[in-house]
Length: 118
Image (tube, rainbow, N blue to C red; front, side, top):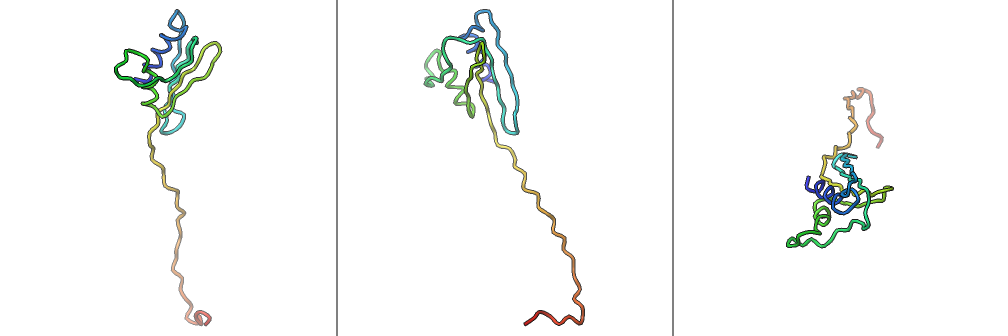
């Protein structure tokens, strides 16, 4: 939730979305163990960059926090704006391969069987 809040705050603070524009938030789970959030904004003059994570700074550490809390993040241009996204991942159970059931049956050896060849 913190990462979603940060991406939205960045859209308002650093892009045209905060000057009367709009932004869109999308959340999806593309596969087991992955959650992705994407914020599409109206674009701005600078590109998103994770700065140094300085806990004493008043600002400028949001994307560094997003980078630290997620598996990966990035952005891409989306005319006329930009999409900034982040993914979180977690381990999922991996099912064991299905084993073929081997059917065994007892076979009777005929009494007149000579046995293995020597």
